[in-house]
Length: 272
Image 1 (tube, rainbow, N blue to C red):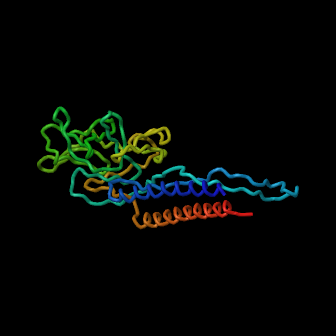
Image 2: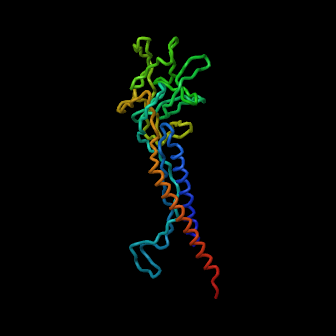
Image 3: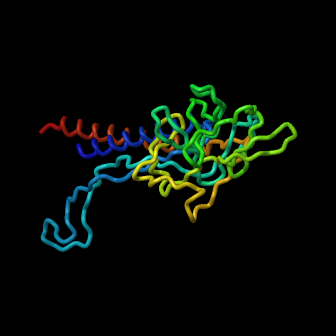
């Protein structure tokens, strides 16, 4: 009977993680570029009560008797499907259509990746204007350099093409292209990226090395949409259904523990 107590406890613990994941999805329903997460489970060890070949009577049986010992969380998988594109009034908002990620430089000097294109203009220590995230991380070009506004050019005149190419307009509206382009990268296994908070992701051995879209053959180049943002791909209706299912599973495991405890209490109170 103690087996039932421990088995149901693993179910309750796993469903709690499931609810935590669903809550995080709902909390980020309005986070730009957020990708919904899904909790994955796997069964634990099985205890063999009887083998296939023999029984207590020495008879051969084709089916064994095994009892599972519960479940545990094996992974939280991000669903990297395209979010809907929403129009924006800001000239420094960008949405990616495709599999690419923006590259940004963190305060520690390392390169991180994000789908959140909610950028702004910022100033460095020398007073130069550069494109940055809302947290001040510099947005990088294909060479790994920040995207600066040229001297004597107003930031409002900066121009960005659908390929992420950077330029600026003169007073007559003529475009002069600079030798810069958004550094967009793809990964063999995006689920291997490590989440760092602030909508930032870090490349790992599991994700594979970042592949530059402009130089890696075989990649479908992403499109960059100025004055658009990629909305979260969280489906509120699906998450509410998943939450109800997780709650019911949690309650069922709790009921199993109560039943097992009641049966143990009955056995302990037997009288001769």
